[in-house]
Structures are given as C-alpha cells and as structure tokens.
Amino acid sequence: MITEKQDCPDNIGKCGLLVGGSGLIGGGILHYFKTHVGGGFELLGPNSKQLSLRAPEDIRHHIRRHRPEFIINCAIAALDSNPLLAYQINYLGALHLARAALEQGIPYIHFSSAAVLPPGENLTEQDRLELTAELPNYPKSKLLAELALAEMHRKHGLDYTSIRLGVVYGAHDHKIQGFHRMMFAIADQIMPMLFTNRRAAHSYTNAAKIPPFVHHILNHREEFGGKTWHFVDPEAVLLSKLILTIKAYLQAKRPWKLFLPYPVAHFGTGIIHFLIRLMGRIGIDARMPAELLFMEQFYQTQTLSCSHLQESSFVDPKPEATVFTELPHLLEYYLTRWEALNLITSFNKEFFDCGRESEDFVRDPARLLERLER
Ligand SMILES: NC(=O)c1ccc[n+]([C@@H]2O[C@H](COP(=O)([O-])OP(=O)(O)OC[C@H]3O[C@@H](n4cnc5c(N)ncnc54)[C@H](OP(=O)(O)O)[C@@H]3O)[C@@H](O)[C@H]2O)c1
Image 1: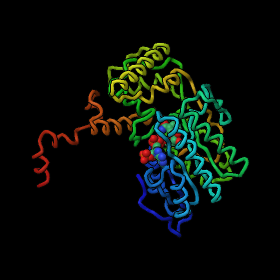
Image 2: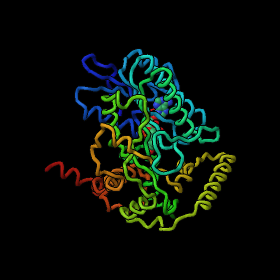
Image 3: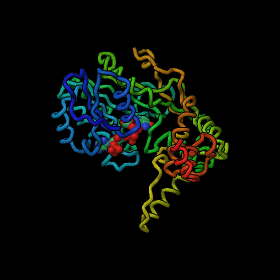
Image 4: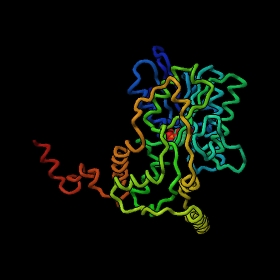
C-alpha cells in the first residue's frame, strides 16, 4: 500500500521516505504509520517505478523534491535474482540511500537478515559470515551492505540502524516467500516428507512488531544509532514442530512424519536443477523454487540472541505472541487469499470456512438479489 501524498507537509514534525512499500515489511510499516501514529510522523512510499534503487537519479530527485527527515529501506531483489540485480538493489541501492542520508544529515534505517550469519546458536550482533566470492547472491549482497554501512558510520558518522530479521511471519506477503512459501507447500500438499531433521531450529520475527520498533528507534537515535540489532522472538522454533503443527491445523495428510536425510534432499535438489537446465535447452522456461536454494539451512540450527534488544528501552508490544500463537490467524488469512486466487485446491476448505462467503454467488446467484430486497 502506497500513500498518495506527494509532498511532506510543513506542519508535520517528521517526514520520511520509505523504499519497498509494496513488500511484506515495507507495507506493514506504511500501514502502521498511516493508522497508528497520529500527527508525529508522515511517510512517503514511492513504488519501484517512481523510485528505483537501480537508478540513483531517482533517489536524488526524491530527496531534492521532498526533503525527507529520515529514510527507511525495505527494498530487496527477488531471492533468486542474478548477481547484477542483487548487487544493484541490495548493495548499491542501500549505499545510494545511505549516502543521501549522510548528505542530508538524517537517519537511515536499514533491514538486514539472518542470512549474513553462520549456523550456530545464540548468535550475537557481532557475528557475521566471512565475506567470500562463493557466497550466494542474497547473503553476499546483504553482508556487503552491512559492512559498508558500518564503515560509513565509522568514517563519516552516518546515523544508521541496521535491523537483522529472522524468518519473518505475518499477513500480506503477496509474493509468498520464505515461511509463507513453506505454509503454501503444506496447504497445497506438495511437501511429502519433512525436509529437515529433528534438531534444526531457527529464530522467527513477527512482522507486526517491526513497525512499532521502527517508530521507537526513530524516537531514540542516541540509543539505537550506529548499530545493528537482532529483532527476533526470544524463543527459537523447531522447524519440524512448526511443520507438523501447520499440518495438524490443516488436517492434512502430508507431510508424513519422516525426516528426509540431507544427502537425499541435496541429491533431489541437484536433479531438479539438472531438469530445469534441460528444459531451458528445449525452450521451456522453468525456475528453481527460490526456497530450494536455502535447503541446507532447513537442516542447520541458526538462532539469534535478542538479549541486546531485551536490555534496550524498547518494550515488546505483545510478548506472548509467537509464530505458534499467530498460526490460526495466518492460516485463515493466507488460505482465504490463496483459495480466492485459485492457487490451492487440496486442503480441507471447511476448516476455516473459506469460500462460504461466495457460496451463493457460485451456486444460487438469485438469492443474492432476494436478500437485497429485504
Ligand atoms: N521476509 C523475510 O522473511 C525476511 C527475512 C529476513 C530479512 N528480510 C529483509 O527485510 C527487507 C524487506 O523484505 P520483504 O520480505 O518485505 O521483501 P518483499 O516483500 O519481497 O518486498 C520487496 C520490496 O522491494 C521493492 N523493490 C524491488 N526492487 C526494487 C527497486 N529496484 N527499487 C525500489 N524498490 C524495489 C519491491 O517493490 P516492487 O514490488 O514494486 O518490485 C518490494 O516493495 C529486506 O531487506 C529483506 O532482506 C526479510
């Protein structure tokens, strides 16, 4: 959702520029600032055609025209993008925005990812992968951006905050990525077995808590500036438990409770990769599902420490919420949406009452008109 406003009004204390407002995280922040934050803040959310991070002149034009007082970057290239897009959007785009913030002397809020971290437990903000040429495009570009921002802070005093997210869960992920892709695979019954092991656990981030955090850090620059913060739920989540809980909610038959060993999963992924290349040779356009690029992570534990965040002045607005408590709502939201878009057919439709609302429209349209007369 993009605000229609084009100029920052003079009477508003803080007017910001948000890039990536049509995405899961950016959309939530735009919505929050429009509906929850009265008076104090106003956000401009140009779409990627109005402001593309691949076009530095777009950024200069927006900054000159609207003179924002802070910048939030929620833009990201698709996970399976080629190196050029990952480089231009995730790294160079972040750099252009940070330079603009530096020139204007305004804060720059950046979103980073657990993808910059190695496997391990209770990883801190100081942990990072080693920067090597062999890293896949997404972690390499996110890591480069983090390192460059830290350098710009050290050398030039850039006022920035980098927020590292875990696996994000929340409504309105219209591209069906990450955790929501996994939910989709279970709902669509295309996950026959557990593509994980008994021990693999990860950190999750509640998308609904991100906007209040951004609001808080904008109001507390001293405390939150010049640093990276882990923003995740305190409890790590066992991937197998989460998959089986989703299966139970959906009353689905699959995935069977069989753990597919990693070497077999890896071999299977290799076969898919080979078939896709073969199809390309005979003119059929096919792509590797982006999530299969992260297959290894399904088998490795990676949990982020949030003790730094817990010791900060930020108060969790809903400490009891976890991915498990939010599942019923998320499933209801996504199943309704996916069913409406004809994306899934095979789950128990009665379970969440999906489709009932349009039953008369489908079976007995005259009833709709009868009801109108009452
Ligand atoms: N979702 C997660 O699970 C997760 C986990 C860890 C970290 N993060 C981080 O959180 C941030 C936001 O992720 P998300 O999940 O909200 O992503 P998303 O839903 O895929 O949204 C990406 C946004 O980037 C915009 N964009 C793409 N190319 C652009 C360009 N050239 N110029 C300007 N905007 C462009 C897209 O606009 P169009 O739709 O117009 O292309 C869209 O608004 C990213 O930094 C990501 O690394 C996300």
